[in-house]
Length: 573
Image 1 (cartoon, rainbow, N blue to C red):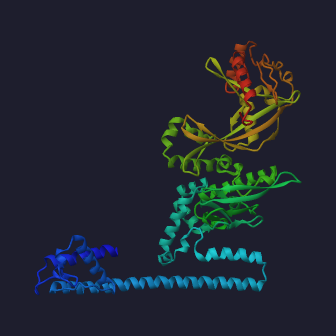
Image 2: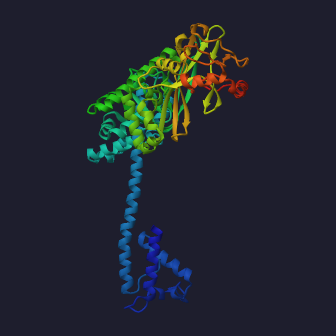
């Protein structure tokens, strides 16, 4: 900028000498060059003329001098103006440079005073020398301002000068952009005033420099955290068995929700969370969350029921094995796993907001998604990235015959006049307000009525959360699957059914039981031929769950053979 300014002055100085009228005769260009006077500036080359004019312009900004002087009134007036400008520019440069030097000197002086005070303190406490060196190293980085710790809103002193209403609006906008938990997303869309109160009462940002610890094992948890940006390392002790322990290191990235249990339970941290690089986190205080629920009964109803369901699932996970429970989100405590266990009214509130948010109401009505939501077999939610997600709770039944350890499997479906081979366990969607045991009993009563009186449920496995796709509605679907174990308590002959005929004999572990045909008592009116069995099943047992009919044996054999050779990815395949 200084060079450009001087270039403009040099051009103006040359133009005045070349074309401005002179009241004294000669202009500065007519002065001779050197002592001999053989050549004037006007006769010199362009490069010499320009460098001379630039030299003259620079001398007006600084205390320098040269042999070119004004020769007439116009040149004298322009020279005076340049000198006045030079005084302002030169003095401002000098004062700015002096201020920066003084500021740096005061900063270094303050830094040295703080480090000296720390040294005196450590010496008075007689601390270990190795610890002193390490502490001084971290203190030097902290006071130098070279830390990669992110700046927060409270670090900007200018914001404290703004009106409190403007500060609250800024805090709300910063918090609202960071909400990724499905429950908080729903709250934000359902109750604008309530989420604003939540941001004001319960949310605050925290910054960590590399190496800073957010919490320690056995420390009381007062808040949940969402990683806004940065990366952390979470370390906890995994109790493999009573005599063996191992430390597990987990990398935690942005958009991860941490220590959600602190919002719904009296929680103590079980691991150590350390920042791997500069991190910014959004903290949600549990007490502030409770205060924010006042004023909207619908929000309070949903949030309280969500907290109860979370507590119930967390207690179930602790009963299965405390070593597997950490401060991170567990699959069984994710929003997708909790939503199906909420009361039907809560599910309707959450589903309605999700459908309205992404304008799916019209398409859902045409495809039957609304009917599924109303009936309680399906619920919708907005996930952590803002996409609508369909959640379905499915209960599968593993019905085993104790005499030989074989279990019942579905190997086909009747579709029209044919049979489509499909090997899997019988399963049914869990309805609203229905327990997993009740869903399994309904499955047998509606799909396998001849076996309803001879079944006893022994245990229920923990839930599994698995992603899937529902092509009919073009909405991403998550399945919450539960496996229910049951045994036959009576023989088939005692129920009035003939013995089961094994259609296939495949050595597998566990073995597979397939029914080639069921014959019922004459009072039911069931025919004995395979065609009659198919018609009876379609009329009485629902074609959705058939075990085997003679026309589907060959296609089922190929599925079971490939499943045996390739292995199974999960117990629900």
